[in-house]
Length: 178
Image (cartoon, rainbow, N blue to C red; front, side, top):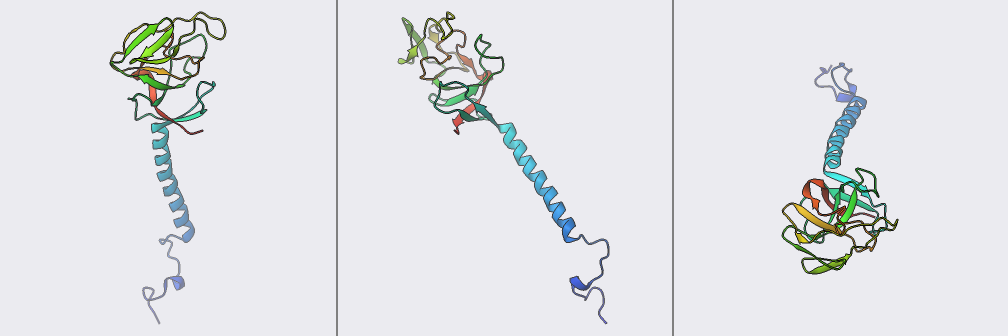
């Protein structure tokens, strides 16, 4: 007769100490879920999904990398604008960086230039008829950005009510996803 140690595993009587296949599967699922949750949590902490609610950009959905809050000219950013009469507090904007620290802002009439390049007109009135002022000329200070879109009705840095966006308001460099 064989000892218990010599018996094939399938023929041994359960001792209560050895995990069953079901218990191993449940444990694997729990551990896998915890690992996936940790990874998912990290993704949620690093990336932010934003929706463009106007026609100012051709894309309507963006992912902002919150670990990258120092954009370069031509990159898109997601940011929280200053309070305006047009949008609710805390709304997220997506715009393109047209000016970086050290760039000069100039006005020729109501046409706005950044670093010598025209970025569009600052209209005298909004689509709703509210009088709006253009941004003041000057040099973009450290940690501030001129943001805009090419849409003629875009509420962006061309207007004093939005102005330059401080780095602290930037949620992250954004990429369109839809």
